[in-house]
Amino acid sequence: MDPNLTGKTIAELRKRAQLTQSQLSEKLGVSDKAVSKWERGLSCPDISLLNKLSIILDTDIESILYGYEVKNVWKGILVLDDSIESDIIIYDKPLLNYLLSQFLLVGIKDIIIVGRPGFISIPGIEIEVFNDLQKVNQRFSKNMFVIYGNYFLYGPNLTKHFKRAMSRKDDLTVIAAMSGKGDYGLLVNSDKKAIIADVKNSNKYFALPYFFIHGNCLIDWRSSVKELLKNKRLNAETMVRGMASFHINNYDKALQMGAFVKIMQEITGERVGCVEELAIRRGLTGYKEAIKTCDSDTRQYLRDLFE
Image (cartoon, rainbow, N blue to C red; front, side):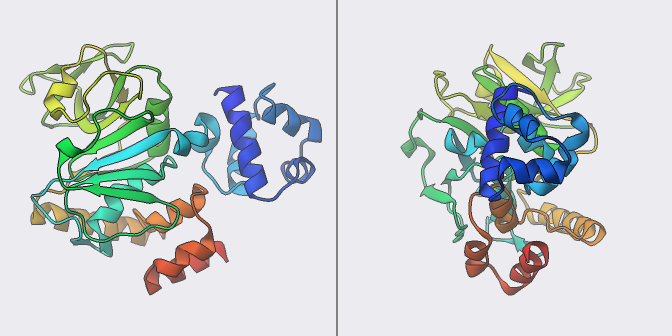
């Protein structure tokens, strides 16, 4: 936990919730001075307060721990796989919604889509579309979170893993999953440095094509996934067990993911990959704006949550 980053995050979220320091301290059962010290980066909230604090500020614990201001310094880039249409319905929403939700988890509102997506409009989100990968700039002043292909990750603490990868000052970080199989085997040492390995070997980790690239590095992100994994400065953000990953590149896999989403939504009562909910919770748009463009089922879901 970085006290300065956590403090700025608490201050921003408190103001967004239209609370004074005194009102927030009263709700938490702490002194005004404690909240003031947090926001100035002089101390951090006790870990026992984080759950209650996240509820009051309408966010998640990871956003408080790892910082909320990523939306202004990161660009999301989604390189679609053209083997299947991105507007295909996965249970109750288009595939594209699930893919874009990965960026919204960490508050990224500036997104480029490479490919031929179906129409999508998310209040508060700026989306630019390119048909040709080579027509997109090689480098940006912003940091980049790039997803190559129609991949979707779901599981506990996903926001925390993404934000931890974003907080690393290294040039290039890839998500590494604990899996029985994968296209790109990785060997990861205790310092989280990674090298690509023969998938025939017994590998604990496999790379998922989720790359976090800092804007000051000289890497051409338009290279192939395999070329990026050969980078000698590659780092890995290792995921815990219990994560579900989907590569939706054919209709059978779309059906499998649809069945998974149905089960998870029935069990949890949450809507998996709901971009409108994420945009509201991450402060990218307001509730009244979000319900203007969504379908009737999503509108009712949001009303139940926020009214």
